Amino acid sequence: MKNALRQIKNYPSAVLGLMIILFLVGLAIYAVITIPYSEAVRLWRGEDNVWLETPRNARPAWFNYFYKEKRPLTIVRRTTDEDAQKTVLDLGGGVKITDTVLEFEYNYDRFPTELAVFLQASFQAARPNINLIWVTPDGREIPLTEIQVRSSETYRISQDSRLERRLGGVKPEVGLFSDPNNPGKPLKGTYKLLAEGMVFEEDSTVEASLVVYGQLHGLAGTDHRRRDLTVALLWGAPVALSFGLIAAVGSSLTTMMLAAAAVWFGGWVDWLIRRVNEIVMILPLLPILIMVGLFYSRSIWVILGVVIALGIFGSGILSYRSMFLQVRESGYIEAARAYGAGSGRIIFRYMIPRILPVLVPGFVIQVPTYVFLEATLSVLGLGDPLLPTWGKLLSDAQTNGALINGHFYWVLEPAFLLMLAGLGFVMLGFALDRIFNPRLRGL
Image 1 (cartoon, one colour):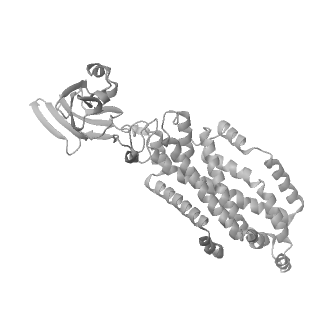
Image 2 (cartoon, one colour):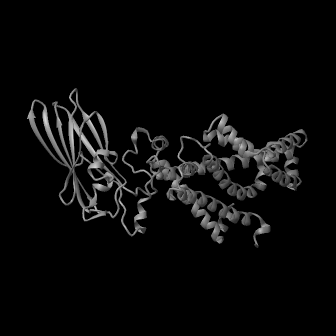
Image 3 (tube, helix red, strand yellow):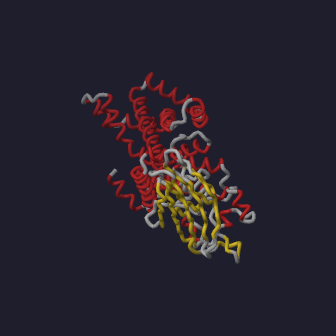
């Protein structure tokens, strides 16, 4: 094995494959450390309105480097920000007038996709009142609405039909940003949202946050539920690698041990293992997994257990059996039997290590098979409903017509990582096959 590892550097494909695998392993470790499992599930399920301030179906932010016209990113301004301009006028008796100015710079060449104001209020009986006014860079003041705020209130500016009529039938996210001299382009400069509030109790408060939803967001973009795809891309790495590695190791090692036991003990043990192997080989794996997902459980661990159970008695057991038949006739096996070595020692100490190098290339090449199997089940809608994975991204993209609607990044990003994982393991596996197989070293 040490000699084989030293030979890897003589194969550029193996070095490149190993670098890809190490990159994916690093990505998996980073995902697990920065986003714990419970947090990843919470983010993917969108609990507690965690994606409330995220745009819907936004492309990755780095796309701006390739656009001639700079597209907007999401802007969030809150009355709790340190630079928010606040004034408070106490009228006595618990009545106060609060004026807050939320300023932001808008220097983009396209209009935002949505506008919303989120309000939070604390009071005992009398609900606070707030008046919202939009101020453009050229000084125009456009009244938005006046609201009696409950404990939690959302004002979707983009969905305000009355405001749209006042803007001449133009959507608010366009009309509020339009340049009067060129309505097809946004007016660049400093915009303001004036939040004029009035509270009627001593400890009553009202806070507001303005969200200008952009066309681009984050490293990987967002989906139809406003979820940041970076979460699924990161967590897809540990899920895919753990599924592939556990399935490959579990099935390969167990298959090898069963083949060694069948050859060594022979008789009814060999007959039973071969009969089970013949039955399993005619069973279709994918339909069985679909049935398990439909009628029993879609948990990734249940699916993994079924994959390993069916893989143990797969076609590999015949290949290992033919190798062990040759090993059993070796002289050192006869010597071990002569000095009284038990069956367990002969199998695990002398027979299996003899062909273990042959297992390594096959095991490495098997990993992407199981990685793509997990993605296939997710695309078919049978993946784990809790885990964000690459296959789940592809499934959601297909369901929501990502390619038809031009959200190609939604498909290409997980597909690229799946292909990268397959390429890395296959390149390393083929090189290891040449190293461990003497007949291929000269090729």
